[in-house]
Length: 70
Image (cartoon, rainbow, N blue to C red; front, side, top):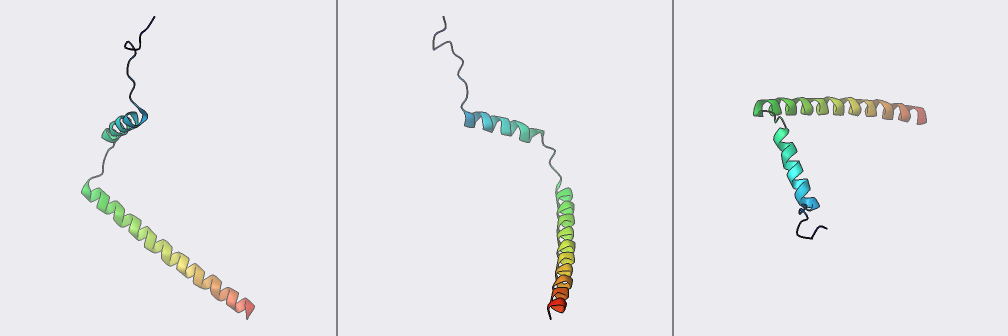
């Protein structure tokens, strides 16, 4: 028969989560500063290009709606 003292203490959920998270973060291959800057530049360029495209499409479609309704 097992006593309470023989039981192995299990960590609570927060401790287990923290330990597992830190273990996973050690496995991550972090980008270099140059890679991060290059990728950030790509993201900004795509955002600018898409905003221009969507702005142009919005202008075209709103002009068509005005033309049809007037």
